[in-house]
Length: 120
Image 1 (spheres, rainbow, N blue to C red):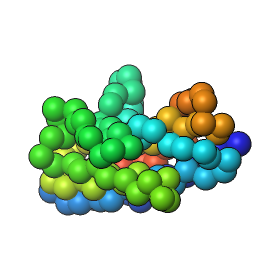
Image 2: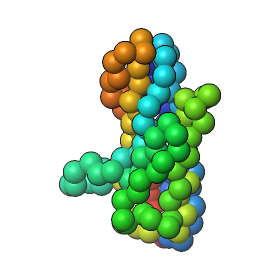
Image 3: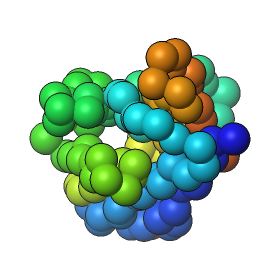
Image 4: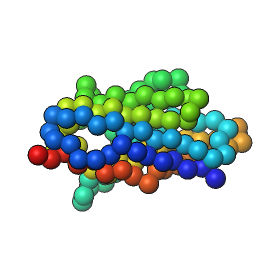
């Protein structure tokens, strides 16, 4: 079994900052790419940022320059630092990870989601 547990969501005013974290636990041999996605009410889930095991990052255009993704391979944890938050960043944020339990096959795992609300 593999579980992804997110933390750090909440309510913040426009222009503020929040930090999310997601820790993978369970029977983990190795984690590959990890990332954050979000889903706003009435919209499809969209990519926010991803990071490879080697640290290569990819961001949605809408968050470039404001969000920073990072990871700790030893802890199987991925982080998302969100600055200069805007109301349109309001969404449920989901953690995603490619994890192998046996060193051969990788599967996709998702966290339960954490609410981020940007409002005055």
